[in-house]
Image 1 (cartoon, each protein chain N blue to C red):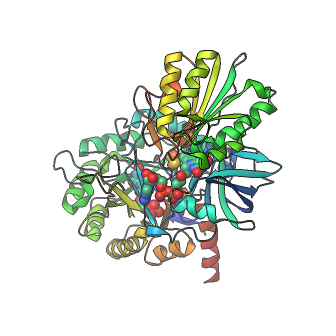
Image 2: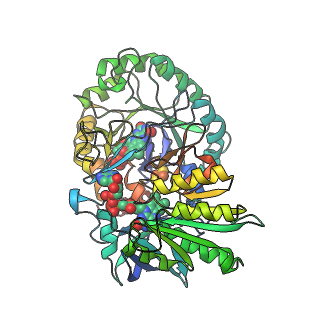
Image 3: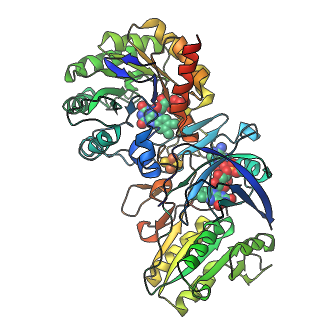
Length: 272
Length: 304
Ligand SMILES: Cc1cc2nc3c(=O)[nH]c(=O)nc-3n(C[C@H](O)[C@H](O)[C@H](O)COP(=O)(O)OP(=O)(O)OC[C@H]3O[C@@H](n4cnc5c(N)ncnc54)[C@H](O)[C@@H]3O)c2cc1C
Ligand SMILES: Cc1cc2nc3c(=O)[nH]c(=O)nc-3n(C[C@H](O)[C@H](O)[C@H](O)COP(=O)(O)O)c2cc1C
Ligand code: FES
């Protein structure tokens, strides 16, 4: 797990790319620590953060680090409210407050197991840097299966962030007409000796969790939650833990072993 | 810019608000960077209760206009585990020697809460025995099991409870007043007369938010705990008025907090009578903000 410098840092936006319905925010961070796949950062625009509807946004927002290369960090954004909307407006040269990398990332598959990456919507973001990390660790591209689900074809364009993805859409406008968990079910039936890495809406994550539990397949789920701080200070980002009590998504996760959850809380997923 | 507070010599006047900075979790996130530049001149723990508490079901947060409504529900491991597991870790992080002596260290203030005089007495007694703890802050925003009324909401009830427990510790006792009361100045005065060494305020203002799904009937509350407490810039003006009112009524030191984001806000609280200033919600936006406020405050003081 990479540690974060103990203060937010002002970084400069290097670009904003369109990726179908999503935006890819690129930020220069040559001196920042190298993140582990699955870690996230708290982001806030340095100017005009606040003053939107209801005077929001006020707190910074959590975003998975989607990719890291040559001192540049990339974030995949979906406009779902005042915070993400303001971040989507940023352009090269704008300044951005960043705190991170934060949280516990994905753990590499144990020897003899292949990785199956399952993403839904904007939740595909941490799977891109995971795919990079698996490749850097020597996994052949063909060994890693990538299954991504989206609402429609415009969102499915986001699949270009990962290599060799098989796509499902809810409305059938691209790829398999149906749920990404349909693809996962078939994949696990074909080869049960895998580790599943998943990030996406709560419903999808719960589907993945239940499926992997039945198949006795290990799964690591990257959860989301409303966060105020991102570093364990506010106790606001909790999900119920199997056996009672709560886990803080920001410091106990965001990547949590599926076995630690009885079910995935309805608020613990990416925007659906 | 060092300041004396209840016999403690502090490096500067900026501390954290209880429950808004978990030093142990922060050390995991930020590593030794944190110990090397600890932002607060004293560290206040989150509220500790006799029994462990899980806290409220999620969602626990709602972003309001210029503020945050939280319904965290005071999760904590309970007194026994706090003393056994957290205290040694905190002592190590804060640089406290085993005998509590703290040259160059960050003094530890433990915040406790109980629902009756008996519970509070037990909490104070247990903390009194631990040299790592420099002072105790008593959170009185807790319903009294006997009356159902928040212990700190009524001056007479507050004085009665404090008199019953005051003898249990010789450490400085800070009473964290509740702002959800008719006359906070009267409560502060009652605390002083019953033996408090200092008062701190303001805690969060009772607040709620409805689920954004406007179609459901009846409208449901958003927060898992039903209602919560408002903090951040939205409460700063209320905090300034309450700190001013309290400082005018008591002779003991006052810890002022509520919506502080920068040195100017901290200076306002000091100028109406606060000895120390605590930063809460702003730390969520920038964990390093306490150190920056302390530094800027020093520049303001020197310039005066
Ligand atoms: C670890 C982690 C990683 C993430 N990674 C990504 C990522 O890579 N890409 C990405 O696009 N997103 C990601 N997210 C989600 C992202 O943080 C949220 O979409 C963002 O915070 C939404 O903020 P907003 O202001 O745009 O929307 P909000 O207005 O906050 O709306 C989002 C939802 O919050 C609720 N809501 C509405 N009003 C309020 C309010 N006043 N207070 C609290 N809740 C409210 C509603 O349920 C609403 O649907 C991640 C989240 C986490 C925790
Ligand atoms: C998430 C959160 C948790 C808090 N937990 C506690 C607590 O455990 N005990 C306590 O006495 N006050 C608690 N507080 C209140 C703060 O210490 C402080 O009094 C209040 O938030 C006002 O300051 P601020 O506006 O700077 O945050 C909490 C506040 C927040 C926002
Ligand atoms: S976001 Fe504050 S504790 Fe997790």
